[in-house]
Image (cartoon, chains in turn red, brown):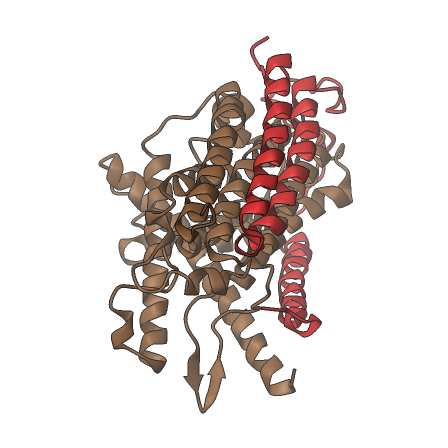
Length: 122
Length: 343
């Protein structure tokens, strides 16, 4: 099946309808409710104690590693999609190529595991 | 595309939008009722008979609450966060086929907003953008609890997206198309994918729990550690959007699970019907499956305790990803064997 640009027109319509709804609701709730300002009230909520500093501090490097590894592996997963669609047309040749590709994928994966990039306790 | 066709699509979009919001609103009611039932309580029973007006009362209340923006927050990003979350959650429903074609007043109406050939990729793409809604909202609040909630939510969602993507690939290998309508049509009658891919179904289901931030993977908003998580500073309909987006994505995930693994609108004995009867029975079948999975989501939430964050990441990276890759390879080899490519 081939899609042409015209098939995406309903999606543009839906973006319009939903975007309009979201913007409208965010706009009107701003004016519907009461509005009271004071210095204490506008500060951040931290279980009732005085707020110390702000939330612009470095977090654990594990989260950063997870994000980097996600980018690497997600790109590899994306390469599987065109293969999966043409799986039955490529036949055995394609399957062997993908087994090779998965082998590389898994070598990278086990390297990451052995390096301890996914260890959270340490 | 003609004007009449555009109006028809617009009507379908508005109807889908209304149904999605209605189901999301009533999912909150049923979640509370199911929880009450599990814990031998009565649950909401004050607003209307059996409390069925409760979601309307909750929604109405949220509209008239103060729209609070903390002084330290980045104002525009703070407003954008819930907007993105709600927008992406509502967009994913557009490529799901709800039933076979309906004939109304001599016109064929396809019960799918857009039948595009990248259907499932479209859904995965919007799921990924959904991470931004949470991350932007949590970061812009300038609150430590919000920041931790947002970082947890985004690292959990991106981690489980990998295994989810690989499970989708096994399904695409079997049907040879990314279009959800083709995937459903390949599962005619009782020929459902779950019978061929039980492992992929289990992994996909676990990943959907993590993607929608549902218990036992709701570490982003675990109240015992992080107060409200990424929506700690939110109030009024902005918080309502975050909560609603969770229930809307619960509904679309259940619909996607029924489409990918449980045959969507297919049901046993469907060859005995045709035309509008088949279409209406198809809608009934599709929604029965969807509601069943919504119930399973609730069932899991009120049965299993929450994971620890390192356990969650280990499960995602060290178990689900290798298992789903091996499952993909086995699927490829079995199909190759059945098609006789080795001869």
